[in-house]
Length: 119
Image (tube, rainbow, N blue to C red):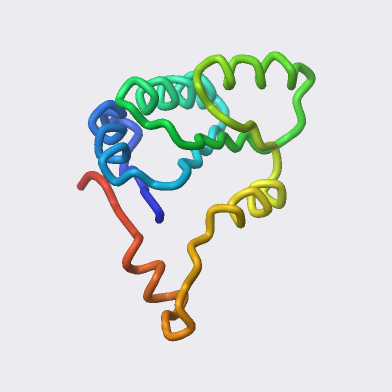
């Protein structure tokens, strides 16, 4: 499932409730500088406060001098895992892939699970 916000001014609380209602197997949040980690921590808390109990994965690409501090902050906010590369993320996401019927094509499955928020 793919969820895309159309602008950075949208309200996370509203979208967090919609995500909880859909109840995906996992949520992946991409955190980019500048200010991305604060916003990501806010999203994690918003999801947890609204009752989302499954895995929340955070992707923060790159290398960090204070990785352990970042990991502690993400875990304290309620995330399950902190990922630092796209290959690591791809391996982790494979655990959540649905088992598809042979007749189902990848493009039709993606189209059925693609959500866009905003105008």
